[in-house]
Image 1 (cartoon, protein in one colour):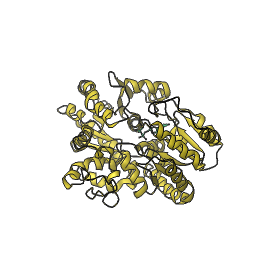
Image 2 (cartoon, helix red, strand yellow):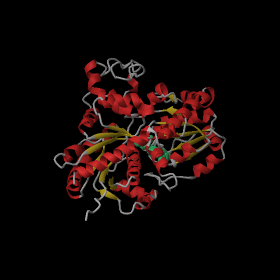
Image 3 (cartoon, protein in one colour):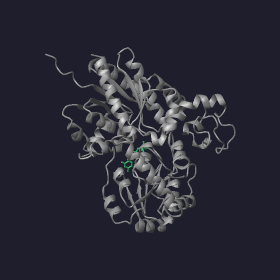
Image 4 (cartoon, protein in one colour):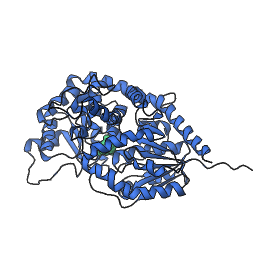
Length: 470
Ligand code: UDP
């Protein structure tokens, strides 16, 4: 008698940082919903944080033995707020620990395919010879990936390295972006010396995308279709399946969800928002990695208070560099904050952005935050910090018309003025384009939408890999 073959077993391996773990857990749940088996590799630190601050463990055990975490011990656990620290993690700490672990798992665990964060190239080498296909998942935007991928071309054409100091000079040789991209909009690594280790690493790993069996992108065709087509010339097998958080919500309508926060969420902010008028509040957050100096903090604080808008501001414990307790907070800031502000350490961001009181988002444009804002139709004020954020913010302003970009400035007057333009002078214009994009984002993850269809195709393709390897 024929026995039913076991479901395909997918090994998922994210880079250990909030935005990466978050989106790859969403993907995990979508694949569990499609009846696949998943092992999720996670650093000991992130595993512990998820256990402390979320219900994700009990949430995923609902999938009756089809899900397990595999904990990685011995990874670097310090901050990753600079290109250099990120680079050391990618090139050194991770491969040292993960290469032997992956080798064992691929041999012993009947893995159908490996979905790995495309910020790491070494899993492709580990999988060589095992017959296990490697799928790259990039947690960044398609526009950022295409820019990383195009750096060698920019060097050939003379766009890089920059000649002179004018950051407003146009970048003319990045296909699909010739009309609007300036030097300052390129990913932050491009401002450094071309021999810089991080830049070299980014170029190398982005080029390795062509060696992967397929590429998954947390984006959708209606948002980044033309740029996805550029990448497709080099990597034909692309699945655009985002926005993943909206996709998961659409496919699990009646079920409970869990947050994937690596920090403790302070839900009192929702009660505070409940008392505010519709679209009146500016939500401010720079994600999980950005750090600011005390001076920058004060510029933002003055700008926020002087704008006269109510504001909800996420100030992580480690947001501000070099705490100096002697620096007293000026009286007017204390008063202005008491009247109109609310500061917390970490919020349930998807819920905050979905709250009717939120009228705009002052963001660093990390890709998850950008997508979450897009889905909820919240206009953005961009203050990118590093990596992909510089190019995301350019697309927010110049291509998608969803807000204004304040990159490379940190001045209380500019901050105040930009808030007023987005929330008063051009409020309706931004709300209308944000609403339009939010509608497209929701349509794409519902039946008949492009991301919906692409996810189904991905699941079928993984199932076929399972059949092929039997
Ligand atoms: N986030 C959150 N609460 C906060 C701030 C951020 O839940 O107070 C989440 C946010 O919803 C997003 C992630 O943290 O999913 C940050 O990812 P992103 O890619 O935007 O930025 P990164 O932290 O990687 O720089």
